[in-house]
Amino acid sequence: MKRTLFFCVFILFIIQLSYSQMNIKPVISSHNFSSKVELWESIGNGILNYQVDVMYIYGKIYVTPSMPDSANHKLPTLTEAYLYPLYNQFKKNKDEILPGYSGDVFLLLNFRAQPIQIYKQLAIEMRPFADMLSYKIEGAEHRGKLRILINDKIQFETINNLKPGFLGLVGNLSDIDKNVDSYKMPLIEVDFDQITTWKGTGNIPFEDFMKIKDLVAKVHSQNKKISTTNCPSNKAVVDLMQTSKVDFINTSEPSRITGFLK
Image (tube, rainbow, N blue to C red; front, side, top):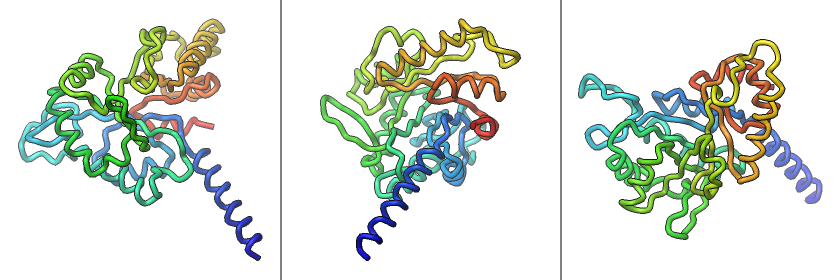
């Protein structure tokens, strides 16, 4: 009886693990969420990685690409729309944001101004959620589930010159040959227009297809992930990204892109 029960529990675990892994969509959503409900819905749809525009306004970090017109704005804070709902998932699922998913979850932040103030405030706001965060500071490593990244190298160096930080860096096409440490730079983002002029009509030129495949293989050999930005939102392009084993499509139209995924 005990052996049968163990076997049943084991099978259920494998099914759950397989479902969790299969349900993950290779998408970074760059649509700014306005509430925790949007993030929870995103996770339910298999989208775990996000890019967010943030600003430091009157002592808090808000989700916005620009300064609001009024002090009476209704903008959500980063904590309300992203950090708290992610942490809620993390604790509910016993230190996993999605059960069975072993990879890092990426939160890419676009600092629209005042990077030092944003970082200092972010450090304060992350304290209650610190066990969820993956970081390495001065040789000390903490393994969580969330990596917070920025793509501005000047801001990154400015912050680290002030104080070694918990942020990682998003690289670009020119960084691939530099082979930067994969913990410092776990993700490379490449603009679709930098690698091909093809827009999804007809067949992609073979040389462009091979260039993309070689690019992906080179990034993966450095133990990094690769994401494409500004992809045309059509099935042919999405199929190419999947065939080429690109890890993520960074898009402001996540629902449209996921509709094309196999």
